[in-house]
Image (cartoon, protein in one colour):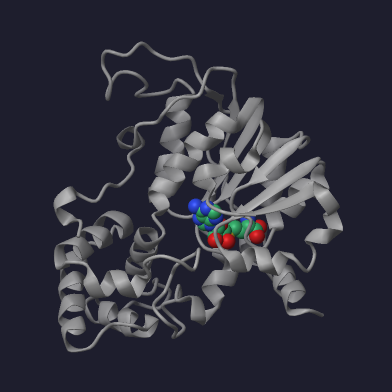
Length: 331
Ligand SMILES: C[S@@+](CC[C@H](N)C(=O)[O-])C[C@H]1O[C@@H](n2cnc3c(N)ncnc32)[C@H](O)[C@@H]1O
């Protein structure tokens, strides 16, 4: 069996079954903004989507799909790019948009991509394989900027201690490997008890978010989905940690006329017509059966909105509680 085929079968799409149930009926034009190993795209095509546009910023993800994408003929179109521009990629109104945020198992499991704090590899973490790498960031950012990133993007309480240790270590020798960084971080924190998460988890999350500008991508992606969806179109987003879930939750709350709209951040604006309705009372999490099969799904949450016919508009990132790195902290 070809390597790409084996890898696709090993990848288990998170929350796919509840997602398909929550967005039913699946028909017409859909866009999967985080194609990865293609689990969602295939699920949507098999559930009745006429066409799926699969977008990923990682060229490797699209390359791997070439082994099977032909099975779907012109019903599956692959685009290398970011989901912040999903309305451009769609080039026409959509019946549905799905986003499954974060890194894929494929990216995490390959040491050479530099996402893992448990496997030694180059300190890279770039999903698109271009631009500034994690090593560039870690070796050149000021101590203050590093501390801000660790605190705001990783909720790391020992951010200042870790930033100081990074700056001290890199003065002796550049930090170029994942294990080098994870050891520096681990030395700043208490040894974890059995069953506790690895001490570098939060720091690696923070640096990955900064390298890939994940929060601005998310806010712009939600805005782009609002522009691209037809009235009645479905938006489904799966998140993996509380910071990104908070952004999606607040976006859907505010855009459905919920708490905060038009008063706290813009007291003088009139309440606007809701741009989404919310078919679920709360976020959906994986059930026991899914967790037994795929423990990595532990922190996943699914939220869904249905587009109304109210005109799309810009979103205030502050109103979405997007963590912002203070200006003074930037390099
Ligand atoms: C969790 S995986 C998606 C897995 C996919 N649902 C599946 O079933 O195989 C996330 C994927 O989204 C991609 N990605 C993350 N942020 C992106 C962005 N802003 N634009 C485009 N792709 C992005 C990553 O490169 C990765 O391949």
